[in-house]
Structures are given as structure tokens and as C-alpha cells.
Image 1 (cartoon, rainbow, N blue to C red):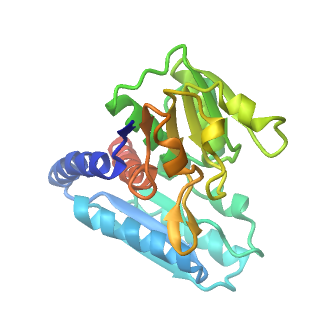
Image 2: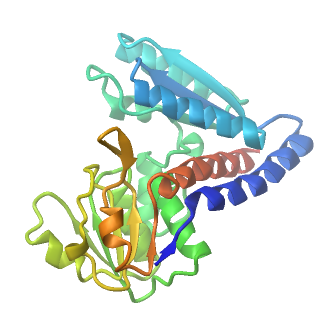
Image 3: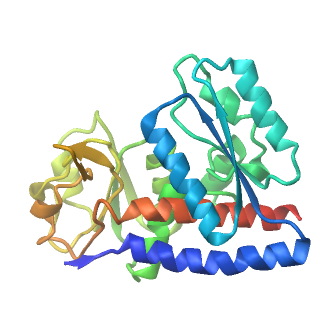
Length: 280
């Protein structure tokens, strides 16, 4: 078993992005700017926002934190995003999810222009991904693909199984793997005999949000296992994969923490820099 070190890989990527951000600022006379919109007081969301702002500071991206109260109206939220969309100093906009239940997330996200959609959630960017054309790709699946590339794990002709069909991870992950010439199966809560399907996978991506869903009997010998989940089990962070039970069967595996998580933030920074360079 070889551990896929997302923490070190992300650090290497951030080092390169720091040089790119400095070059951008020098050439155009302004820093790359990322606006992060947080609505409400969800503790986990607040932590994620702080981590993203810290990462921005590390690489020289100017971050704008816009915090709205939990009772903010739909109109207020949409107007805030619209204002940021018109601000030339803001190259990327991120609305931290989940939003308070009374807000329509799709309408708020729709106010982000595709050019500033650094999360890759816009209809235009999702459509470009589905067509295999260049656009901004969701950060987590993009980070997974970067790990596979950097660890020289082949995808062409391989059988890939993605557990989870969310718009943020599962679906774009499947499309990226298809684009990398893998044969892809997407599993979900209605999949019959999930274990049998998973055992066919050369590359298994778990993104279900339930602790230790993937057990040793679901993984074939020598498989590559990518654990996207971040859960708490008995006060400790764990993924969707039973790491201890699975590790001796696989060729490569990502840990939790220290696997896909740091890559998600690194890809957000990369998407922001890409967006800035396309806008000038």
C-alpha cells in the first residue's frame, strides 16, 4: 500500500501558485481577488471559510470575506453576489454551502458569472465539462484527478466506480474520469449489491458522507481507493472508507485527514488564478 499524500501535494501546488500570483500582481498592478460569501453561523462553514482565507493569504491572493446574517433575505443575498460580480477587483466568487434553509441556493449561485465561478457549479461550466470542453471544474474532483496524475496512476481503460451522485463531487468526478478514458459506474443509495459493483473497480472513489461505508469486502486486491468523505466518528475525523480495514488490500489510498481535503483548497486557489488570468 502506498499513501497518497494530499497535504504535501497541495503544498507543492500552492508554492507554484504563489509565484503565479506574484507575477500577476506585478504585470497588472493589482492582486488576484477572491470573494467568499458566508451566510449564517454554521460552525463548519465558518471553519472552511477561515481555512480558505488563510490559504489565500499564503499564496498572495487577496480575499474578501462577506458575511451575511442567517436571516438574510433572498434579495439581499442575490444583490450581494451581483455587486461582487460587477467588481473588477474580484476575479472569483465563492458562496459557502450549505445555505440557510429559507434561501434558494440555485438562484444565488446563478448570480455568479461563469467567468468568476471558481467552484465550477454554474450551468455553463457544468455544461462545458459534460461536453469535454474547457471551463472551471469543481474543486474536489479536480483535486482527485490531480492526485491521480501526480502519482502516475493510469486511468485509460480502467474500471472506475464513483459512490455518490452529488452535483458537487459525484457527477463531475464521473465526467472527469470519462474524459480520462476510464470506464465509469456511478453508484448511489438505490444501487443493488453495492459491494459487488465496488469490487470491480480498479479506481474506487467514495463520496457518500457516511463514516466507513466502504469496507474491506467491497475492495478488490490492488485497487486505488480515493476517500472524499470527511466525517466525525467518536470525535475523530474519518472518511467514507474503513482505512484500517482496507489499507492492506489496495495499491494506493488517500488518508483522512490529509488526502483529498487539502487538494480541494489548492484547486480553489488554482481556479481563482486561472479565472483572473482569463479576465485581464
